[in-house]
Image 1: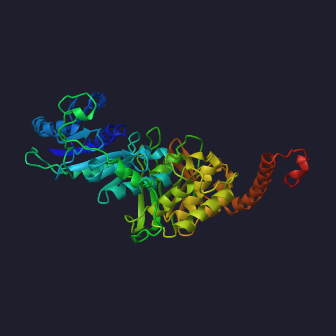
Image 2: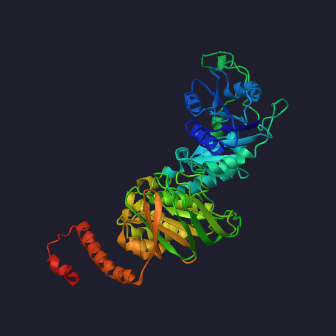
Image 3: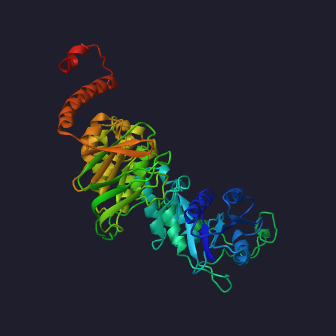
Length: 508
């Protein structure tokens, strides 16, 4: 029987990830089991039973969850062997933020979510620092730049672990995780095995049932705060503060030659008959009605889908150094920020994760270009959570354009950003990259070399942009410039009382 330990903070999405992984393994492993460890109560066993998974529940109650876990885990493994399970997974919440459920020579997975805060990876303790695989969830809720910063912090806390993004709702990324679980070692029992880290050490009066607060009632193994030391060391230090002279680890840039999209199926299950190869330097525009699946195609490209997403598509990459760098830079509609930092700190953190040397220069450049795109200017000292929607998009456009070394750029409905989109495309479209633009805007649609037409969740047609369309694009840009001038006039408080027919007279 294969045995794998899963751990992570409460509500990080462990159960959802485990269920998606089991879905990927069905047909390969025949019988699955989960032992769910918690403190007071759990409802996850209902989800496992509904999915046809053998489930056991262990509640520590008023006992230390670490001690409860280690006192029972060998019996759980033996029970799994007796039941004839092919795979047993232990799931523990790590409520004390120190729990160490990982065992030497047993595959260890830690689940952490992107919304937990940028410093959280360094606070989690042994369940993250001693894991073999770290699964990052809820990455679709924040901007890609913040995902990259969060992953960078994860890798700093545990450099040797493999970091994966998994979406517990859609299952995106679960297939790759399932491949690692398939390689897990088989065991019969845990007798003689060792924990990767010691459990919390304490034997005091409170462990034995004392409830009264006060020095007279504190006996045994106790630990006191040295307040004098705190006063003499009172300078506040944020763990996200960066030294501009940090060491750079040189890695070769990824070189992409082409991307091939192999069709899956549409929302009705009908086959998506497509085998499309896109070469470096091409700009591909993706068009279709709202809800047709444009963003889903971008997500498939972002995660290099292997048939493990709702569309069943497969994305193949031809190139070099593909495992050494971030391959994709994405400018999505989702511009949420959860980090409580300034614009400048955010850019510096992202720059460090990208191995950029001159932090001061890149910060100034990104803020400058963001202000060219945004209607209302802002400084690097402004908290990123205080930015408006348009300012956030402008910041992310400039960040993606100037910081990204990724050979693939994904742009999702940039016309909704409330920014100068022509200037934005000019910044984003760089030589040597493959660019995908999802859009409802006819001007953006005609900027590409090809148009992918999406309907009912599938690619229905690929159109090469014609020369006559490019000529019409020039006229459309003139109309757009006039509309832009009207918007700016309204924003500045002017009245639109002139002769509108004369203003657009050349159109007639």
